[in-house]
Image (cartoon, rainbow, N blue to C red):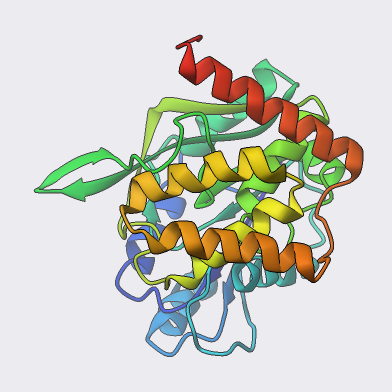
Length: 285
C-alpha cells in the first residue's frame, strides 16, 4: 500500500530529529514523507533539510507563516499545502506531528489493520507522555478517539469526508464524518507512540472559546454543547472554561457562522453523541 504522510512543522528543533529518525527506521516506510516548514524561527529548517537531502522519499517545502504556534487552522493549512504538492496515488494518507517517536513497526501494523478490514477509515496507535521518568498514556480523550498527532486515513474515507477542515477541532469533525459515512475508526492500544511534548502546552486559552464555536458549527445543539462544556470544565478545573465556551457558542449563533456539516449530518452527530453519553452513564461497552 502506498502511504503519503505530511508533517506540518513549526519550531520543533528539540523534538524533530528524533521524530524523523523514527520514520527512517520503519520496517515499512511511507512512499512519500512531506515536511512543511510552517514559518519556523528556530533550527527546524536545518533538521528538515538534513533528512530531505539524504532520503529521496522525503521532500520539504517552506510555507510563509505568522510565526505563532496555533492549533487547528494554521496546522491544517500547512497540511493541505503539503498535500497540494504531492502527485502520489496513495492508498493511505496521514497527518502526523513533528514531536512524536513511532515504534519501528508502526506502518507495518497500520497496513495490516487496513488490509484486514476494508471498512476501517481511520487508524492509529496511542500516545504516551513521559511523567517522572515513566512513559504513561496521555489521558486527554476517550481511548477510542484517534489523536490529531498521528491520523492515518484510507483514501476512500479521506475523500468521502472531504479532507480536513482548516479549523480547530478538525480531528473531531473527521471522525464524526467518517462514522456518518459508515467507516470504522480503530485505535490499536498495543502500538505505543511517544509524545515528546504534552498536547496544547504551547497554545493559549482562546482555544476554549473556539471549542464553544466548534460545538455550534457541528450542530451539537444546547444540550450536547452543555455536556461537552462541563466535560471540558472537569478537565481544566477553571470556571472561565464555562463562560468561554458559552461565549464561543452564542457568538457563533448570533453571527450565524457557517456550519461544518449538513442538517442530516448534524442530526446523525447529535444522535451519535447522545448514544455515547447513555453508554457511559450506564457503563455499556
